[in-house]
Length: 193
Image 1 (cartoon, one colour):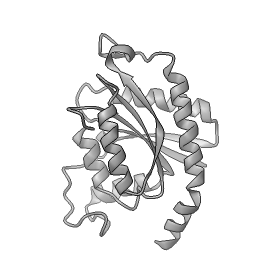
Image 2 (cartoon, helix red, strand yellow):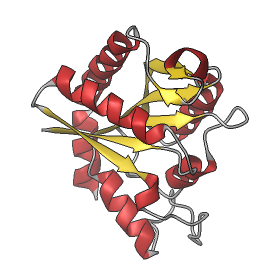
Image 3 (cartoon, helix red, strand yellow):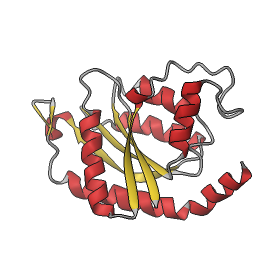
């Protein structure tokens, strides 16, 4: 069974990311069927401090207990969907920090993006795409860009437009195609460990 982690990138009080992620999960699970497990991954549950590992993850796995717990969880997925708001044209520090904790756990896996904000978090996702490339992730093209004006009532209550449903379906279809195509690369990486 393919396992996909839907990572809630914001830990901010009053965030909307948990609602957006649950909506994505429900649509994705219904669309993909029983052969795929979509699981919510809430950064709030990991309580990761500002990166506190002495050696970069590209050189050596982290030693802190919170790093090992995060690595185990992230390493268990075949692909990811990052759900991110946009703060000052970037993803929240909580998401960037969580990504920076790890290296090999991300490699050889596909990643998709659902952004929300004034302009759909397009700039934040653009920066995340650059980060994904460095980590050897397969960054897929479709992106769901939810805007505060169109997909939130009074800019606060999440109520996505109906046209977003086929956007999520296209994102899931391409993510699954890339995930299946990358299976040999993930298997080779696992065998090398």
